[in-house]
Length: 384
Image 1 (cartoon, rainbow, N blue to C red):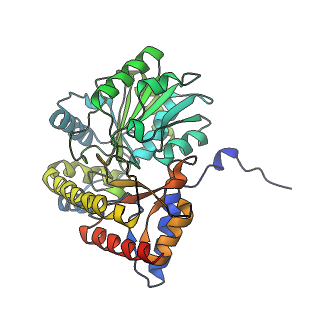
Image 2: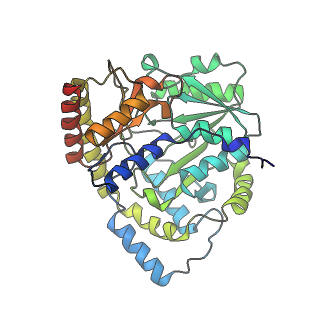
């Protein structure tokens, strides 16, 4: 007898994790690898975070916390909004989560019912498409290209039929680094308000920008759910900690879902994260390094044959066309890893329809690795 397998588990893989596995296997075999595939800072958590974690292991009771997290951490997050955005956030509206991924799951479950339609830009973070599909929601990718800066606008959304129930926005975005211009963002907020569309604002790359600072949607749209993470700007990737800023109408629903699905976020990570808000100077030093790395790739990739390049306004990614290379992006990425030891991510991870012609390069590593990657890619491209 055949045992049933649920359809919701038949979602697409997160290809960047497959690439990382292949890169790790190469490294385990004794070959060197330059990791430009995963969006993970090469710097670990700041020293005070490590010290706070050690102290917590020795002195704190590492049992469950409240479902929404430690009050001290929620208060520090609220203080951060006051200083960074000049926005007052009631700590009661803040829910600490098991990574931003936990936040997305909670937001989708609390705000939408099975069959609801959730729109997002294409290309975009694969979790938008795959998590919504796994939760029996209907993903609605909105094709965004160079003509709109790889971001949606109100006119594009107005052509959707039927009108979606939700819209995911990310500015800066993964994989492009593109940001939404203030006037465009205002138009999207107005359109969603008129149509009754709930916005989920992915703000996990806030703090990593190279021109204008990113704007939080909290306070601009009373129905919006804001999701952030300690993984990117805060350099705490493996600690699996994020947060949500909730509208009042979803507060209790998210709390009940958290209690039943996660119980609480990781307690040790929460104690450690309180200290990260005293480390902003060190974190901004990381951003200056990302800016240098960004320029190395923007200068070095086009002579190798990659382009055009999406606007890299923020985050730590370059999303580049594969130019005249004959292979499709998954095969090309496999060839690049095999021939050069440079691990990069195929564009199909972010856009199954149009991503064959793109590759994502992450520049969250060291500047030396970025220079070495460009040198290797130059030699590879010249010998092809």
